[in-house]
Figure (cartoon, rainbow, N blue to C red):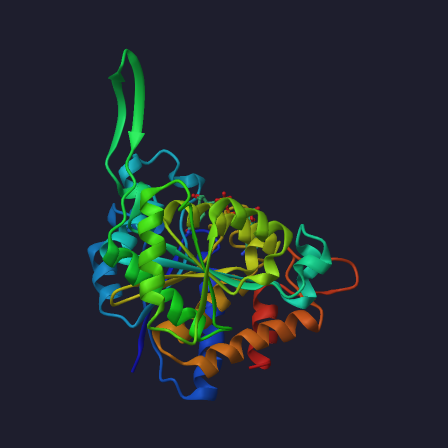
Length: 354
Ligand SMILES: NC(=O)c1ccc[n+]([C@@H]2O[C@H](COP(=O)([O-])OP(=O)(O)OC[C@H]3O[C@@H](n4cnc5c(N)ncnc54)[C@H](O)[C@@H]3O)[C@@H](O)[C@H]2O)c1
């Protein structure tokens, strides 16, 4: 029986993970998935109970699971906690301890939500892409110097490095992702300037040869940033390093137009973690009005990537699309003429459509 560890976390975390589990249970009923759930603490809630944002027991449970569904952590209540024990440290700790080496961020603009994108409707329509970001290498993890004297002036530096195996691993994952989609991969680098990018480019080309069904092209990061704003519908899967991926995935999320809708996956060598891209939204916590769709779509990703239950994942995604097409909107998306639905109501609508 596949075991899912659920970590609600803080703020709206409990509301949105409860909603996602209800949807998973509906998918389970239809597709006989036999899912089992185990609940664990992380973030501020864990700090209050155990004095640490990431108890050992939570890490062990995640490691022993088939997938982790994560809500969100953080809130004003823990603003004065010492930096090493702040709720957000739970995410960094899990990344490290579970070896989460890749972040997958899909940005799909449902036809019903085209008007929420800051782009013109004709540019936003049909956007359906995934950014695959390398998460444990590159400049964020290189050596750095905060301050030194050099030729009589103060300077600082950060070192970027990528090894062939690191690039091979992420490009293979991106090819696998593209294979499940439209088979188009764009590898993004800055090979006209950076040595790491030149190694990235030639390694990516070699690794992609094992996937003849995937068509790969290269793009410089500055051009990619521009293309995401002027023609995002051209992309299927984008693969890139840690720094470029950080920036491009936030740009792509804004193009999506609605923070409550976007899911993500952090892929590890054994267990992977799935969470919405938004935070714990303390301003609306406990009111039952949070948009659970980013978490529900994260649960669909868990079914797809960790359990290989493509049909069940699609059923959830289509149910979300149907609810939107029929005019249901959570308060963050509601406008005159639409049907207002709180967290429980939209969850019920989605469950009914699976
Ligand atoms: N992965 C994570 O757990 C994560 C990510 C980002 C921020 N945080 C933490 O979350 C806390 C709040 O951060 P923030 O306010 O900058 O970002 P946030 O994403 O929590 O909220 C930003 C705004 O978007 C709204 N919002 C977010 N998700 C929503 C949803 N599902 N439905 C409806 N409205 C939604 C909020 O009400 C708020 O107005 C902070 O402690 C921060 O550190 C955690």
